[in-house]
Length: 276
Image (cartoon, rainbow, N blue to C red):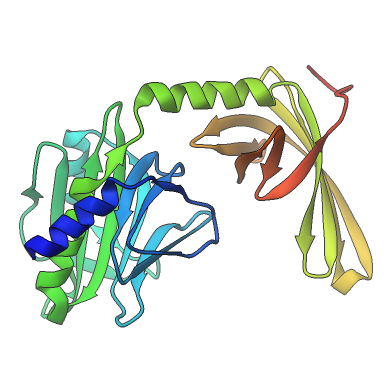
């Protein structure tokens, strides 16, 4: 076990790789995950992939064990309160606590659960790692009881080596991206099968936006055009579009030289005659 811990810590000293959505990464590797605002180690024999709206999912090829990481807004007291509430999985299945909340350190909290109050074959661990300014990461570990010791050791190494991006750097990066986007008018094409869907977006300096969508429907037989209005903001390298009807749309932003990529698609800037 000491050798494993040593190797894991060695991984964390390596240069980090910036995680991109829908890309599979193989451990051992150090990942910089802007969606979570953290840097973390991906252990050997594990792979990681992040999909929009689903968090970062770690898995093993030789087992069904998984770990899912999502960002939360919690302080230490909020973490305890969260672990004390009733929890359900996405499919509505209730999970049952198996022990009390364990305070691993001043910023790491853990509680064990099972899928059935009388059957502890399938187990879960909920970790909450608390950072500064109410930033936190929730890690859900789902595994078979036969690998209990190994999974607890691996998950503990991950959460203890996890580090939050310094608030100053995070804030400066966010402010720089917001300044870059204010008053911008861009067009980008999103590939949908054999067709290109056109998005034309105006981001006004007052926090409002207009989005024109031109999409192919009915198997390419016709097109649908829609204009949407709402407010916009930036968080963790993601553009958040909040429609006036309450729906949200997240767009991952990356930079390639001087160009901006919207969900990985190249954008083209035009003159903004709609708003400033």
